[in-house]
Structures are given as C-alpha cells and as structure tokens.
Picture 1: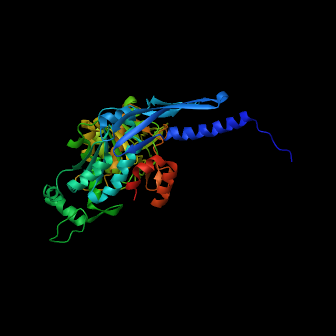
Picture 2: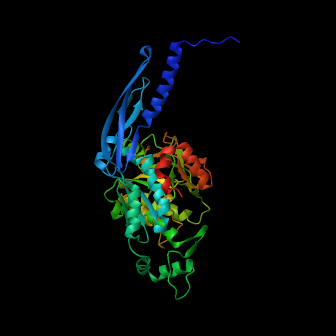
Picture 3: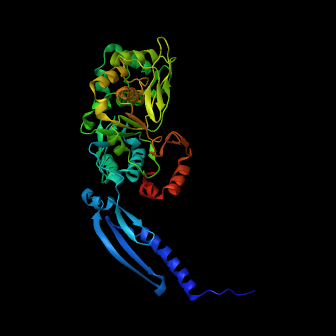
Length: 432
C-alpha cells in the first residue's frame, strides 16, 4: 500500500481549522455568572496561516448587576455575533422595540396555582421580556389572598421585571350580599347549596350545555369577559398580553408581537381561530344576537377569517350561522379599544342578569368587540401564526392550537431541553 504524503502546510492548516473551531465554541460561550454579577467578553481572533500563528485579544464588557434594571439595558440591547473571519462583535438588536403601557396578565383562584404561574412567568421572560430589557410588567389577579412570602417568591422569578399580585376585589360573601334574593336563590340552586349552608368558590355549579365547574372557574369567565378591562390595576396600561396560568411559551421569539400591535394599530392579535363557536342550536344563541343588536345595531351572522384577519358575516332574515370565537389561552389586546363605551355596554349585557355564569364565555366576549372594530378598520385583528409569528405556546397539549405536543409533561420537558436549551436552563427550577 502506498503511503500518502501530507505536507507541513496541510498539517498546519488542519491544526488551525481545529483550533479555530475550538475558539468559535469558546467565543459563543464566553460569558458566565459570578454570584449575581454577569461578566462577558468580546474576543477578536486573527489567524495568519502563512506564519502558523493565531493571536486573539480579550476585552471585558463592564460588569453589571442582573437585579439592576438600568444596568441590564447595556447588555440586553446587544447580542454576540461571530463573523466568517472569526471576529466576535457586539451588534445592537434592533428587532425588538420597547413600548409604553404593556403588561402580561393572568388570573388564578388562589396561591396553590403558583408553581404553574412561576413556570409561565419564567418562560415569558426567557422568550420575550428579556429582549425588551424586562420592561413589561406582570399583573397576577387572584380571587383569594396570597401571603407576603408567596408574593415575594413569585416576584423573585419575574425579577428584574415588576410583578404585582392583585386581589380582584370583593369577597364571595360581599358579592353574594350584593345580589337580589332572586339571584341568590338561583345561584344556590344551580350550585346545589344545602339549606343553611354557605356557598363557596369550590361548590360545583350546573349550567345547561356545560360540564359542571366550580364557582371559582365560572367567576373567572365573567371576570375576564367584563370586569378586567376597567380594573384599576390595569388602567395605566394600554396593551394586555394575556396568558392562561398553565400556558407555556416553548421557544425564543424572533418577532415582536407588541411592536406589530402598535405599528399596525391592532385591536386584537390571537393564535387560534376558530376555537369553538356559538351555534344556532345553542340555548344562548338568540340571546347573544339580541344583545349584539341592542348594542351595535348591526347584527352579524358568523365570524370568519380571511387572509389572517377576522371578518363579520351577515345573514338574510331568519338565517342563522355559528359565531366562531378566538382562543382564550393567549391573546394580545388593545385595552383602550375594549374600554370604549359601546364595547363596555355590550360586555355588561354579555354577562347577563345572573352572575357567575360560565355560559357567557370570555372567548366570545373578546371576539365580538374586535369584530365590530374590524367593520371600520378591516385590519384590526391579526392571526399571529398566519402573519409569521411562531409563538409556540403550549396549551392543552398543542402548540398554538395547531401542532400536537407530548401529553406527558416530562416528555415535553425533554423536548424543551433539546429544542430550546437556553430557555429550559433558565426555567428548569420551575418546570415540575
């Protein structure tokens, strides 16, 4: 067998290639934490094959405290880039813009839901909020009070973003006292409250066409349909990004939904449509149309999506079509639009005479005002995924209600670690 000959120049070139690959790996990982201080380095590499020399300079980027929101701005505005010549450089990230008046919102019954909320908050920070320097606040509505320790524990997960746990308002006892005798009797019968007993949030209550749910769950539908838009805790905000407490963002976002919301003057951005509907056979269908007609004077017959935007349908007299709705687990809304007098009039009618109804769902309540805004502004709504926003929000074992996810949460965590290791490592302590 003839022995192959390898020239010294070739050996040198191969060695340089290996060293270059090692340096690239080092460059992209040249950042680490020391206590609460973050250090990062900018490295310049020069390779001179003819002289078989490699030289590199290391310069340290100023140390910042990750708990200091202002000092974090100097790091989070930048991203490390390695060009084809092996030079790492800090390049300003211009794809995400900070806007005023943006808030992430969810709602829970009590503090026992805090593990799921911690995971949701951490993943939102990892995927999006850190790209806008943690500028957007979290508001967590709760029906039952949390302890100070429980609040601080959740705030530590959100930091350096601001997080507030807000008690929604009146207690159940106070709400019951404000009802008329007829309304109290109706609710007690619906929830099968024994004589001389007191109703609680955990009483399961029957409704036609609905699976029995506890009173706390029925209340959240009403709260989200009507009360949330003008709640004092949200009056300083214009844009609300809603997450169900068990929704989990599963990738780093590469496009900015809030920036699109602002620039396109949207009323509503959503990830899933249709997500259920009110059909003519539904016992609330005629009542719904009546309330719509009383408010807007322009009856609709169906809701449709055309080129990634919602459009109203119109029927001939006596004709009826299902009214489809957007998904409620995630949406981005313009609060100022929903606070308009005309929409508040509809939403108050929407929840009906008898409170705590699951029938008057928050999903159709979000859909109807947006549809009427689209009559004057045909592009008032946006299907996020149709328009290139792949948010990959896991809910009910699907991403964005379109792609199936592992039903087993541990299998999901393994997939998350493989597909998005950075997000997984940031939030692994809260994925249980």
